[in-house]
Length: 140
Image (cartoon, rainbow, N blue to C red; front, top):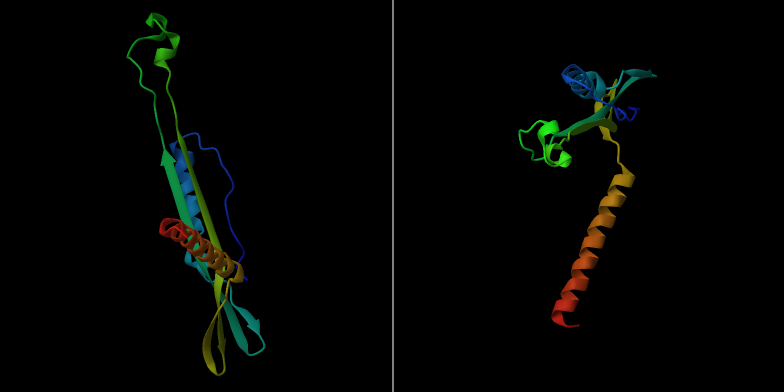
């Protein structure tokens, strides 16, 4: 089965390192990451298929300051500013098994019960919260 892949927190100090990190994030979404290596099981060949994702964010900020050299400033804090930030995540999970055999090809989905359970709980919670609010509005 395809394994969960991710890159941990990394400090990026310059453009070259940022470019390398972005390249590493996109390595996860190559076709070789989506389809696993074929495995022979009796007369069948089994291949896993995965979904992959990459998300990134970058930001920067800087405080308002006057163009006054620090030694000439009335207040030493008036020339203070800074910021920065960025991050990313890449991952994958198995979603199907492709089986090739003497009787043809079949694709069997892999059901993620945890994901379905969490989705159900989210919908149930939203429904319950809406019902409570409607009862308060209706005065009941």
